[in-house]
Length: 205
Image (tube, rainbow, N blue to C red; front, side, top):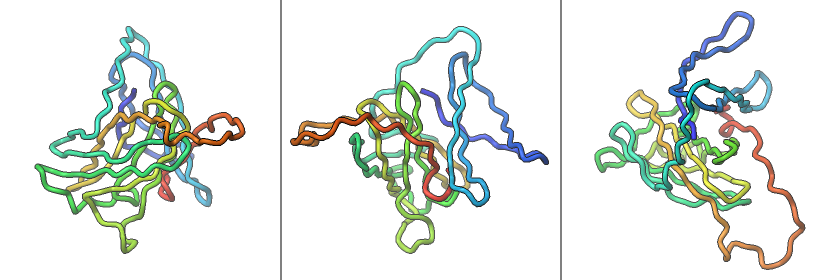
């Protein structure tokens, strides 16, 4: 599963955005571009890149509820349940103390991307609240609502900004429908909905 990295971009006079990207090793990659055209809705486009050479597949990182990044600890609460909105809470601490002064980044205190293992489908993940709305606190918790279409493993990447720097915490989470969640009455058979490209809320990220 690819890692998510931020890169600076440039806009040319003819309206073309470009970005310099260095890929770390041979293999297949998928890149995503989040944007909102003037007067239009936020959207996400993806493209596949191939790097020639000897390719050695690596296993997906193990399912975990807490990760470390640059001296910060990020804990993940909540579960992914196929076919319904799932509340996910990310809690940021540093040296055991809650971080209560997260800084806005692209219009939110955090941004979360969810990718389905296997096909790397990009999934809807919506932040709960926004800086300055009178109810959303700048940490330590950041709340999101995600809906996944199927059972399986997903990679989640959280971007958060603190002390002027944006950091990314990556998680592996497994989505399962337990017996208690399985409908007891027959329902019309439908195919799993395919994830649609989407930005984060109204921020285009």
